[in-house]
Length: 386
Ligand code: PMP
Image (spheres, helix red, strand yellow):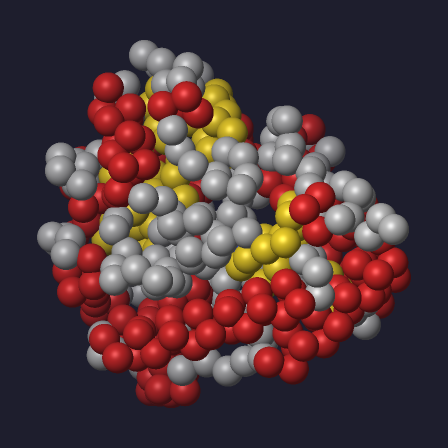
């Protein structure tokens, strides 16, 4: 048995959602929307399910989805991608696993930015990578020269990047992207850029993919997910866009991880990616309104809220909210005593955790948000220092 997995706790998302279910608490923890989904995308997938093929699709994905991914990124992010560079995967999680298996050899150094999405470190370790951890801190969570200092060496082969960033809700600025791109170029490292939240950005005209920076097209492997774009997290249809020399080995890894992804869901995703610009703008406006409503109500309840520039999340600073509990204790007690599930940021650090910030999900119906805020008000009344 591999001790990495034998001794590993269940992910914090599953643990908090399980506690919310068992205790009947409002779940503002795990990042899944509790409202509907685009009916036309479902209808296209349903039609493909009943009228199309239910046999193995091509290993790299349906041609219609690979073409739709390339066209989508040309239209929305100005990227020039050939469909041959696209590999369809079973969610972004499989995209990460297949990319890391293909691009990392045992002993290669991998730069990881904390707080980090919880799948990253175990996948890097299982691929034999040697993690080099960079640490971001609140309230700004900025990537700077100082933060990156020492992380990149001559042995750096890959940097695992996430933008917009879960859990901090940061959308990194062009100067931060340029810093990271320059550091990767100096070490001749690949940037594996997890951009699953690419359509969830607020208060800015567009999402700048790091793949669009000068000379980065040959260095960046970009990951996307239909689950996030269409608010259907259970779908697990993702994709990788890789420079041609890397697409080949990544496809070889993918063929022995999942081999393929349900063809009917691929057809639905292909249709959805072609939806008009207005669809994506309205979706963003809806999420931005939910974010603003949650922020306002949290502040009225006495919470100090950090900026949210993207994703489904916003973070609360417990110390600045007058709560002296550490984040894990707060979350454990809030779900049991006040009836609301949140996610402690310390769960996203492998070392030297930040322990006074919790993450809340605003991708919820107004009544869920209201019930969650009422419970968070009870939590503050219970836990805030007098
Ligand atoms: N990467 C990040 C940063 C995420 O937030 C998530 C989902 N929460 C994933 C990957 C996983 O995506 P998928 O469900 O498509 O596997």
